[in-house]
Structure formats: structure tokens, C-alpha cells
Amino acid sequence: MSEALIRKGDFCWHCHTGIFAYPMWVALKEQVPLIIWGEESKEYTAYFKEGEVEEVNEDRFNRFVNLGITADDMANMIKGDFDFDYRDLKPFTYPPKEELQKLGVRSICLGSYIPWDVKAQVEIIQRELGWQGDTVEGMPDGVWPYEKIECSMQGVRDYIKFRKRGYSRISQMCALDIRNGRMLPQQADLYRANEGQRPASLDRFLEMVGMAEAEFDQIIDSMKVYPWE
Amino acid sequence: MVKSRCFKNYRDIGAPRTVARVLNHGKADELILLNVDHANRTIAPLLEVLPAISAEIFVPLTVGGGIRAYDDAKILLAAGVEKVVINSAAYDNILVMREVSKKHGAQAVCASVDVLIDDWEVYCVSDCGRHEELIPFREHLDNIEQAGAGELLIQFIERDGLMQGLPVDLVQSLCDHTALPLVVAGGVGSYKHLIDTFKGSAVSGIGVGSLFSFTDSNPIRARAACKNAGVNVR
Image (cartoon, rainbow over all chains, first blue to last red; front, side, top):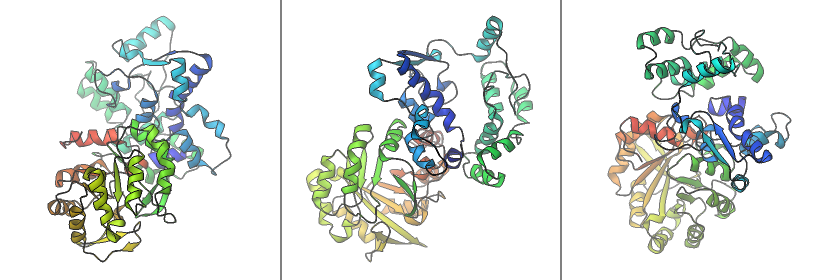
């Protein structure tokens, strides 16, 4: 976490890579040739062109998921920092292209084939499966109780995002709702007034990575993304 | 593979094969790979890593560092690189550059000049930033042009890896001086530096290292930022 934070201003390298690499290893082990993911990344980013069908493959993995650091390289970067076995990093490596080709894997997004509307889909799983949302640190209670509820460090991630880019998940979610005709800009302004607050979980995070807050601040401030000053 | 600060303080950025693969998938326009091993000023280190890199990428590959004779360039071009970078040999024996250009075409020759700046005076430095050359900078540029280089790569040693920006006015004065397509490197730390340099000069390309290795940026984001600012990029 600290290596990724220092190099990239993003401590979630293990999460980004693990999410997209490990299922591919499982697919190989269990000989599953079809993997279906949720939305396309272009719901939120511009790494793929409109109309381009997005395959969740190694190209996409290296294009933006792994922050430009492969697991092999990460292993060398953290070598000597603590005891680990190279095998520990296997879930974060992308499986060999040849093995995936041999299995004939297709790894596609459901969002390539149906219109993606998170709010509408959440209503379905709540109604039909009894799915429950949760509160996310830094987000207004009950407004988007389905986004990033799996991550206890979301508050820190969002704080970093705000300091690097000048906006946080609140702005991102407001923008989506405004675009979908579910929110007025005036309502968004009320939520956005609370963006960028220091999260309580930052203390826990700094303790975990063994870093002083001054060092954390210095790293994040050096990673500001233009046009945010 | 390493990234330096002021041509010193090398920091590991990964294995050549994996870094090249990531930049290939990241849609880099071109990959410039330089041998900066002070202890080995031959092309041997390049030949060691080239097969693995060539097998991975479709991005045009420009390599150099250690080319002393025509045969060095010939071997590298035969190994599949698009352009060879000639730097120190251009001071010692510019006929090397002339021969490569004559036999393989100017498009295969990238003349590289590493420079130190003192106010507006620019000094040529060879041998990985270790040896200051006596020839006046602009005279050296003229020699390179006459020797048949197809492209000029200027690296600003004192700005390398510091991510504080490029000397835009100087870059434009170099564009005015030479007819060669100019690529500059050394100092890019934000998209603003790219935008300011593209808008403030007629430069053909900008080399980026630290921005992609030591922030969460990548070529796709950089290109999008330039496009959004009205810079005409691919």
C-alpha cells in the first residue's frame, strides 16, 4: 500500500490488480471460458471510445487498472521492505496470454449489452433479493448507499481524490445523477459543500502503513492533477 | 529499467519487458529506450533486453546509448527498432550518423543532444551527462542536420526527473533554429507543462518519464488533457 501511495498517489494497487487478475486465475483453474463483469469503465472514464466494446483483458488491465505497475515489478520494488514470497503476489499478476487463449476465455461487460443504470439496478436487487446498502465514509447518509460499500478505506481514497483532483466521489455521483435527470445542480451544490473533509479512517490508514500525516500530505500534494492547483 | 534525476539518482521503475508492455497497452506514441549504464558504453545492454521488448510491443521503438560505430546502429535496426539514438558519437565521429542516414534513411536517425543551461547559454554534454563538449551548441545542431539526422532529441539535464516544467522559450528558439523535427525531454511533471510547451512552441514531441512513472498518470490521460486544451495530438 505504501509503495503504491508513494509512487502513484494511490494506495489501492493491490485492490485494483487483485479484482481484475484473480478471477482470471480462477477461470483458468476451473476452466470457465466466459466471464461477465458489470459496467464498462467508460461509464466513468474515457479509456475506451464510445461504441467500442470493452473486453476486460490484459490490455485493459495495463491501460489503467494496475497504475502502470505489474506484480513482477511491484515484487522488486518492495523487495527487502518485509518478508514475502513471490508466490504471494500471484493473485495480482495477469495470467499468461497463451493459457487464456487456450481456454478461449471471453471476459465481457454486461454494460456493453444493456443500458447501465446503477440506481435502477439497485432497486431490483433490493426488491428481489433483499439486498441492503450501507453508509460510506465521506458520503451523505442514504443518498448513494450502494457505491463502494465494500471498502472500509473509501473515506481515505476519496480524501486523496479530492486533494489530487479537486473533487471527490460526491461530485462524481452528483454528476451522474444530474446527467440522468435525477438531481438538480442546486441540490448537488448542497452535497458538494461537504467535500474534502479529513476522514476519521485516515488515522487507521496511517497506522497501517506506518506513515506520519506530514509525509502523507507531502506525497498527495505532489500528485495534484492539472487543472486542479 | 530506471528513471533518473538530473541524469543521476536512478530509481527502479520495473523490468524493461513489463514497462514496455504497460506503455504499449497505454497507447504511448513511441518508446525511447536509452542505455545509461556508465560502466558499459556499448550496445550490449540494449541487445540483452530488445528481444523481450520487441516481442511485447507494437509501439515504435527508438533506442540508443552506446552506439559508437555504424555497425552498432545496423545491428539495432536489424533487431527491429525504428530509430537509433546517436549522441556521443556525433561529437567524436559524425560520419557514423551520416553513414546510418545514408544507408537506412534519415527517418532511422534520432540525433540526441544532452544540454546544460546557464542563463540563455546552452552547453552540450556527452557521455551520459559526464563530459562537457567544447563545440558551441547551435554549431553542433547544424552539424547534426547536415549529417542527415531525421529528428532531434534535446534533453535538459538539470530538469531531468524534477518534474518542474520545460524551458518553453528556449524550446521555441530551438524550433526556430533547426529544420529538424524536435523532441524535448526533461522536466515534465504535469499536463500543464505539456500544454504550455506544445502551445508555446512548434515542438514536434515531448518525452515523458517521471510523470508516467511517479504519478498515476499515463499516456492516454496526458493525451486527453492536451486535446481538451486545444493541442492537436494524435
